[in-house]
Amino acid sequence: MCLITLDGRKEEPLYRQLYNYFKTEIEKNRIKEGERLPSIRGLAKSLSLSKITVETAYQQLMSEGYIENCNRSRYRVNKYEGLAFTSSRHLIENRIDDPKAEEKVKILYDFASGEMDINGFDFALWKRYISKVFLNKGRLVGYGSVQGRKNSGFK
Image: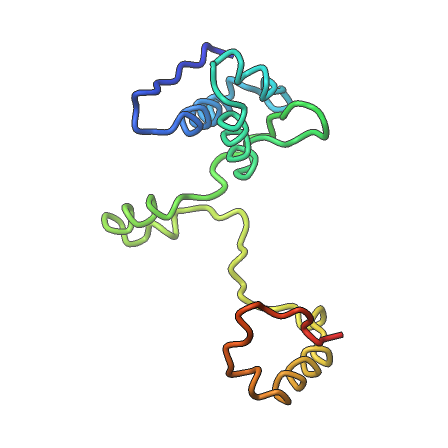
């Protein structure tokens, strides 16, 4: 791993600079799959940062799939398989220049079905709750007590 240099005078937050450093290193395969990243405490101490700054950078890397959290151990680098998603800003900028930009982006995971799992939803229970609410019309359209509710009345 190269020397990590962060600039506190930049507008970009330090956690973001750290995140970008590790992201670039992983994407350029300078940090290999399975390699462990420095501990949060150790890296924070060596860079004179707070642990929260380092942890925030690691959390962002983990949320994007670059690293994984090993239980009570240091973070490890996941296998990098290229671009998993593109930021919306990138799509908007390219859409102006190229109307077929969305077709060029390879989407690995599609979470946009918008459909609900009908088998996993208890309609009978939902109907019972709705019926209880409609029985008390004052509660349905009223403001309620300024002290809040002690018990919802649903069982």
